Image (cartoon, rainbow, N blue to C red; front, side, top):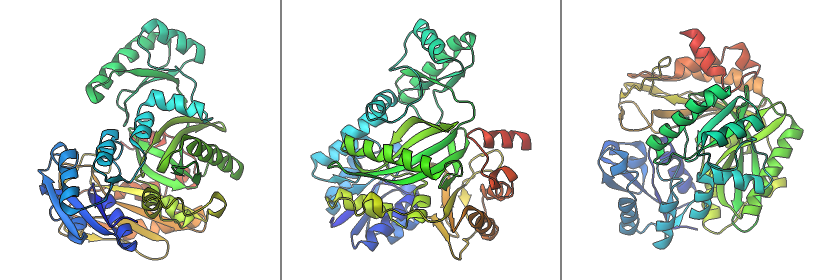
Length: 447
């Protein structure tokens, strides 16, 4: 087991990882920018190192400074959390060159799954169902028209190196295709420095289903069930739940088994999430995230397994602590992402939190690094906390969530709490009848 882990992140995820390390008796080091000097994880860590000014490029994305912090403090491993350097293959390679363990997959696996086109090819080879579309990057309009005609309109054009909805355009006819292709390529080049795009069949009303997987790097793989992340705004997840209200036990076991076998065949090490669009009983691979997800607590709630403990165990060479037959799913869990944003316009709302009170009681968990008097900096992601609720079934979970939202108080800034209070009373949400477009339509109708 590791002696000292450096946590290369901030906010609630840094605190989440820190707690896991303490439970395992591992010393902790956190890095922070000058803007985060008073953050909760900085106060609670055994050691802290300031690595630069507020801009991420000068601090949390500064590989040289993070490696230097490891050497100064004697950290023998780095947990990257999510975001920042968590899916940076170069970072993983540099740490390995310095004999520091990256708590995550190999740089090669990050590279393969970080390229959307190569990831799709790999998924297909591993037996994971994929969305019909181009086999690689599409460079010519004539080729794009041929592919679109074969798979049928509407189609979606996506950036190969993309994410977060940038470089994505829908074409509903051949007349739309030329403009969509040019626009997607232009956006991809500006956002990611790579204008490569590919084409897929566009699904009209899919759900977003993702499967939590783990590999031991030696040919074993397991899955921890699925999460439904269909409530999204501009391709950003807002509300996640496990298990999905849309799947039955047979579908759940099938797609979980497919993913676990694929991870084993890949020789993958650590945590990963394989994401799908699901429509009319069929799963279509979107991408694989080679890191811990923001929404991992709902999986922990229904399995009773600490996924960060598992990450650390696997990275230290201890292998997986469970076999597939050991994993049992109990009850239902929902996570709401509480952001420092206007609940209608979603404009960021940095500032000082004057009063912060979290709900409690059976089945309630709040992952947050903020406190009364904490000043939300304007430089980073607006997530200030996650409310995770678990019940014996979905009905109990929803009732418990309603009560927890009523108890949650954040004063001094605007947050998305009012949005969740509205959603929990909506009939479609109560019935689990929504797709990836539902929330944006709901918000448009409210305006």
